Length: 272
Image (cartoon, rainbow, N blue to C red; front, top):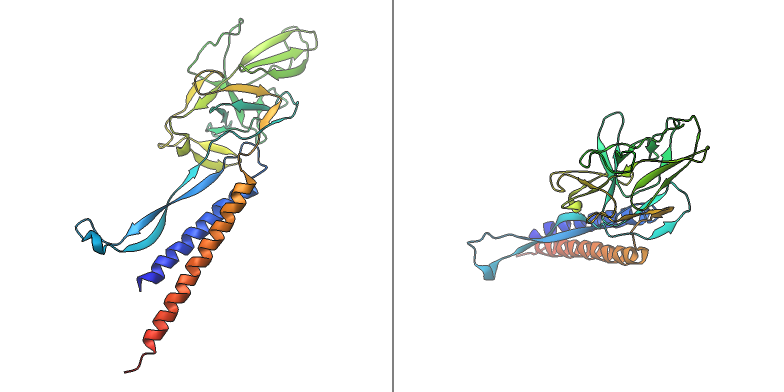
């Protein structure tokens, strides 16, 4: 009986929906996290040449799991190396060992002992090189963000500040300030095609297209908000409603299997 397989597909779909919602809820407080939702499509048993009045469905299947890159809430932290993006851009982070560049919305940065601006997993923030006047030298090429620990006069680094236009300013103990570079933000033609790789990082794919690097404030990038972080865009109330709906769908499909079993048992028990 096809009803068994139809309901079994429904159970599997509900399980996928439950898993996705559970993942969203688990990351409700994860900085830079973007929620996902499951999209379903119906399955038709007959081909295009069949009589449309006799077409029979075989349930539903998972058409895809779409990511929602809507802006999350901005939380003020007051920390100079916490940066949020008020737009569609991504920070570009390069793995110093493999050279792979990943993309993130988590702007929680730090400076290591050699002056590299990194994330918590030691990937290097990408920036544009600038000349003495602060103008970008090579707009199409990004480099690792490195802040000199001492300046030319031998003064020690005292603080770092990232401005809303992307300027990375290094202040030294002798009172001088130097523009080290400007943060490079990446945008994609189809950001929903980015592949999540964990730790709120994504990698480019053929579906997303190649990254386009621009300065903050240009195009869809958005400006930077210093001393702030972007929180998860998960709405817990919405997810709880979705959780209840997915649970009810699971129960309904399980009941349909139970009913089909009773029908089968009745037919088997028929006596001539």
